Amino acid sequence: MPFNRYYLLFILALLTIAAIAGCDTSRLVYKNSDSKKDYWTINAVTLTHCGCTELYVDHFKSGKKDFQLFYSDKLARKTLFEYDNNKTLKTTTLLATTRSDYTTPFDKIDLDIFRNIDSVIINKTGLVYSIQRTEYKGFINDTTYIRHN
Image 1: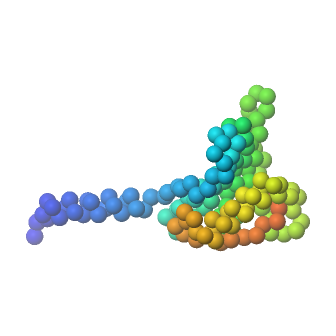
Image 2 (image 1 turned 90 degrees about the horizontal axis):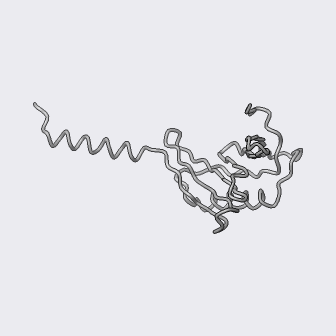
Image 3 (image 1 turned 90 degrees about the vertical axis):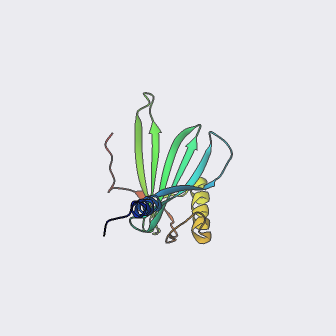
């Protein structure tokens, strides 16, 4: 039985829809200010290959990215960006911990960000897949993630 031309077009259309629906997506779920220079955002990234969602917080100060915080089910990592006089980028990475022996306490911005992350998780704002909520207490140095610049 030969394939009908319309049948092949139908299969091609279904494959196209499946490919588009299977793509990873990013969605802005929160922005704390209307400022164009000093603000932070929370973006939810849906990863279809693992059926999970990750949150990325980008903090901007004077128009430059000051830090990024990555939040997933089992990890929260803060990467600080510093520029020297030659505009060379240096990064420092910290891990959020649930233990009380943290080395770097949360500052006011960190507390506000984690409070908003909790709200996004509880209300499932912009989330396709749920994220496990973790109550972190502070940061420790990330000795597993060393970047040489």
